[in-house]
Amino acid sequence: MTQERFRLLEATIDSAQAALKAGDLSCRELTELYINRIKAYDKQGPNLNSIQTLNPNAFEEADRLDAELLASGPRGPLHGMPVVVKDQVETNDMPTTYGSAVFKDFVSHRNATIVDKMKAAGALILAKTTMGEFAAAYAGSAFGVCRNAYDPTRDASGSSSGTGSSLAANFAMVGIGEDTLGSIRGPAARGSLVGLRPTLPLVSRFGMMPATPSRDTLGPLARTVRDTAILLDVIAGYDPNDPVTAACVGRVPASYTSFLDPNGLRGKRIGVIREPMAADTKTDAADFKAIRAIIDRALADMQAQGAEIVDDIQIPGLLDLIQRSGGTFEAEAAMDEYLAAFPNAPVKSLQELIIRPEVLAFRRIRLMEGVGRTVNDIGHLHQMLVREDLRRAVLKVMADHRVDVLAYSSFDHDPIRIPDDVMTRKEQVSQPGNNRQLTPAIAFPAIAVPAGFTPDGLSVGLELTGRPFDEGVLFAIAYAYEQATQQRKPPSTTPALSGE
Image (cartoon, rainbow, N blue to C red; front, side):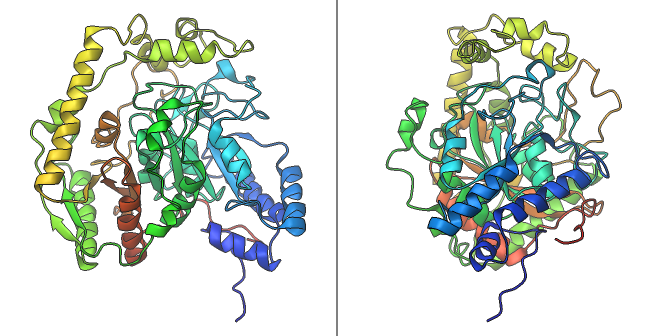
């Protein structure tokens, strides 16, 4: 059988690995193809502004990976695969800016645990991606504004906006995001991508600036469910540098790809949450109705593949519990401890940070909310008790209805248009209809998968939440749905270049 010619647009790990093995592609060629796309579309054309720092040693590293492949075979499942990493994650050879001009020249001189794991599996860290300044929204003083690949006048969601936009536009094979309040699943939903927020103890956070350690988690973004599972295989597992991961020992399967069955929806029970999980959702709005119609079609497709749909699951007091589970009590101590590890850090504390004029005004104001608060405050106790009530309520409703997962839209409204004053305004631009805050509050896993597009060509994400360490169940359902529907489509703003 003649092997199909490798095509870069929408390439997968499997297709690239097959081309490498056949000698039809080299790691250098793959790297060059992606860099060409970045040069063509990131700072010109649609001006997505998704790349913060391009690895200056990318071609040297690609050549070493080519030589290694020839001499001894692939190092691991990501051999030669260009990966983009949210610039909240440390790399020892590139700056880590956290989206802020304050840190534009800061190099930590160490790798995050997941970076070491990806390199051990053969990955090439192609670039650090733009992110909402100190992990909020989609703008930062280090770069400006990251844009939605499907409509560059609109937001790409945050704060892993650069990873989302770059993968949507085919600037890399796979990528890493971070999710405290939805920052993996939001960019996935806006970029017609797959994004997984893992069970909190599953992936090490060592080498990442924290925001709220009881909610923070790193996770994979990709264009397919299989590539997401392959990347999770590489980064999951116990790390003594992040003791919370000890809870995952004995809970990590040999490979998450073993759950990828095209018949994985058969017999699964899907509980549907229809109640909006945001107070600003407008159920009479045209975009709300359009998105809900797409979600209804996705549920019908799942049913056609053998799933049982348990509609309109009611969690008593859901919106109230989500709202009362918020609060900023962990940030100051966590950020101060993190910064203290670096003698070369430009600031040594949260208090120093918020008086730096480079930081966007809205971000300084929001960060100020955490100053003087600690986990010993009575408000933190109330918050944690509410989170436990919410966790118990979710588990109870899943048990009562015998459902495997809960399903809902990541957003109930279209992405907003980027305001002209986004870099100077004092209030954070709010995205209405945000349903992503449930799983961070309870530390459960959730996956966003492409569900289709609105009449305006904007991507819609279907989100699935499972029980702790049920990533395999999420992958089984997401993969079967993906294979049956193939909803992912690349953006027209970044078409194939000559030679791809």
